[in-house]
Image 1 (tube, rainbow, N blue to C red):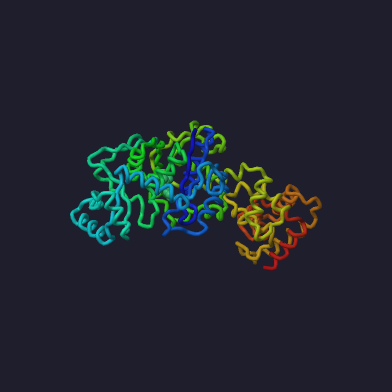
Image 2 (image 1 turned 120 degrees about the vertical axis):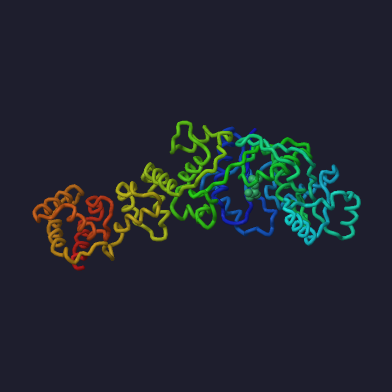
Length: 467
Ligand code: GLU
């Protein structure tokens, strides 16, 4: 049975990196008829952000990556929010204390600071000096009874090689002497990530753990905890950090780390997923665009590559454009209407304009940027029309005679008029285009004019001639 999970912390907006993990976890679980879980890791109360959990779930829903078990979906291992599992961690911490794999530490902040400074001055890796490691459990308990506060630390063995098997990188070997006696329970009784993640992944029967490479250095601690508890560790896959094209770390400042940013900027969830799938994975036929179902069939964790994937917004825009182009017109219409719901576009015009506009769209806001003139008359003109009055009135007169208001007929009438007047086609149509739309670049003009209707076009020509 395959069980995967994401374990986001509700500390801010939903991050695109979380979606990246969720995509692979979801695909792998679905491929093997397993389950995909969402566990909320909210033990760091200082960083807790109200509403962040809901935002994670709305993001998953938007992408269609809904989970099988989570705080909002009942499952056999509830609760799925760490702050509601404190007793479970306490019980397991107690177990480690009894087995002497962990110990109480009473060192004050000041003392720890001193130790750290001293080690840094000696150019050593700053680590806890194990001052409390030999206090017996009975003595420690007596001190706590008497009112002292303590954290619980795990005991790291000396001079051992700790092997972290990683499905993407192979075995990664750590020397235990560079691993700190990690705090696993804080003075407030909350576990740290390290204890909680191991206890939860085990008790929730998670089989495959995919997470960012920033957790790789913590993995030896986790491997030891699995050994201390006598449990089999899940398979680990540490994905490389997603980078910007300049190789810098994808950061908040760059704007596009937040899922909401993509939604607000008119990206389609299916295009984003397709793009993310290609970051670290290659389609066997090297296809760029493929359906999500196809990805689920083909994807294996082991095929992920350890190279840092580059997030190129330009490429994503291109891909989004491809999805827009391939979309059913009816679906695209709905997307456009939803995206612009504040301005309430005329549905019939949207429908008719789609064939004219879609090829020029990369994202949803491109629609109105291109097609605004189909809904409202221009108020400014990208080209000075003061010299074109006469020409525009001649066009007006000619078009007034056109009976069958169709793109082709309009086009023929215009070409013949340009010929009669001895004006080059390109100059003629540019003037007309600006008069009708205000813009130098538009979708095909004749079709746009057909869509606008005869009366509206004649009215616009008159207004433009008065400039
Ligand atoms: N809570 C951790 C995070 O926010 C989860 C790491 C993991 O997947 O083990 O990234």
